[in-house]
Length: 169
Image 1 (cartoon, rainbow, N blue to C red):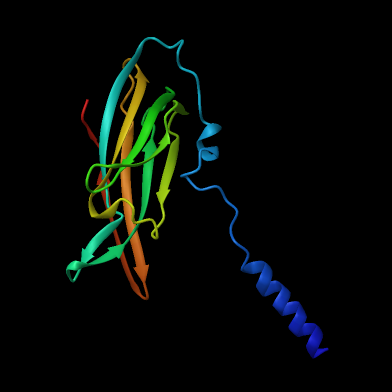
Image 2: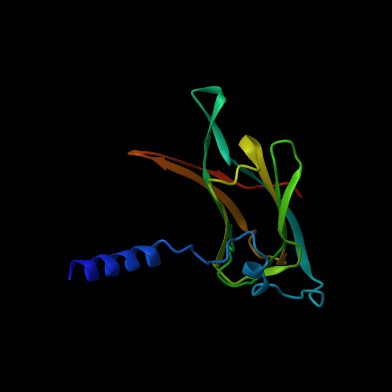
């Protein structure tokens, strides 16, 4: 009976330790279901937004860094209109392009939110990473909102803060 229980609990432990097969926000499959052709929509207003993100922050001194998880929120603030985000580009501290999340338009339905997650172990952006978002909205529609929430927990300590996008065009 003891050997049966040992085998049973070992099997449960192995199954619970299996890698998570979810598609992350860096994979195109995550965005393909949102892609839309807007070539026939000619009366859309264009905008570009800058968002600062911190994949790392300094801790104790300029020589020690602490990694953070960054949650980037793409929000449609309109309760009536669908909006379109054309591109989402992620740059590192030195302004070098790290990755493009999508470069074909995606849609956000009224009041819908899409998210990009930068894992704590992904430090490619460094301490001064940024996003540039290009977007289009119907004329008279409110602008999208782009926000970043950075957080980390270690032991009983927690750290979190936010950033908000700034329209640059």
